[in-house]
Amino acid sequence: MSGRFKLVIQQVLTRAQWDVHRGVPLAIHRQAVLRRLGNVSLLDVGANEGLYALAMRDAGYPGQIYSFEPLPDAYQLLAQRAASDHKWTAENAACGEAPGQLSIHRSQNSVSSSLLSMSRTHLEAAPTSVYVGPEVPCTVLTLDDYFESKDQSERFYMKIDVQGFEDRVLRGARRILTRVDALEMEISFTDLYEDQANWNVMIGGLLDEFELADIRPGFRAADYRLLQADVLLLRKGR
Image (tube, rainbow, N blue to C red; front, side, top):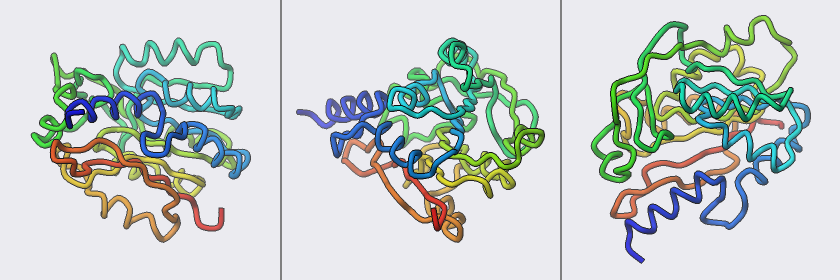
């Protein structure tokens, strides 16, 4: 089996919420963590078409879901999926460090769309991530502002999948982060997007309050170097 073919298979399975390396459904693993945490809401930041939240529902998660997606076409599918679920709220917006308006690059494979410019390393490793068409204007909100008027006792499992924009999401969620019991996000071991925070910066700034609970490899370069991974951090004592 060629390296390129293995990479394609890995990306397809990952998008379908399966862990390639252990053969365990990722959503079932995450649902087990949610059960352990108790009554927490799911923040789905960078929801795309809603497949992550849908997989969590299929795995048995019964709680409140808040999904945020800036791309209008992906949001349309997300909203359709959330419409019949009274505990699933979908917002057509990106999350960042300040409210306003930005433009998002649309990727050919949709899930690699980003508010940041893509690096050559990313494009060479995943050619279907190439940006296509004009940039799309989108609304940006902060999670702190969004939840300011909501129940201040609500606690969260936060999943962030925003293609290099993770540090901006967290800077706009400083108050909310104190109520996050689990944080799942992508980290990059090389620059996949211009001006993104490196993995050691992302993790190092969180380890006073959180501990690393899981790491799952993402996609790789043609020479098999690991470029990206999903990490799960749990609040200490939880």
